[in-house]
Image 1 (spheres, rainbow, N blue to C red):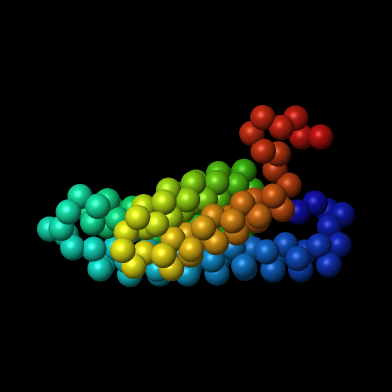
Image 2: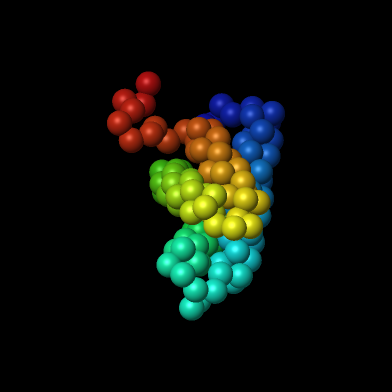
Length: 132
């Protein structure tokens, strides 16, 4: 946020941040549940779904915690959001092929989109941008 940020822009920023955190929280919950339902002694597809579900839940949880912090480095937050979005999309692809995983795949995609949308609200230039 810049010193010239209006109150309306600040409210929108905080609202977008909350939406992103809420999506991360929902995705983490859904992935943890799906991972717990995967048979540890089952076929390789179950093992992959379990691993991806646990990783996605942990990344989403860490992202949610970072979003809850008041003072933060926007560049670090952008990296976390991009990582979270990537992990969520990879996990969604795994759950697309896992029986009963449709709702979790949807939660993962919604989280990835929320992370992308919120990352665009940050002032820090994206890697490769010249800042103007």
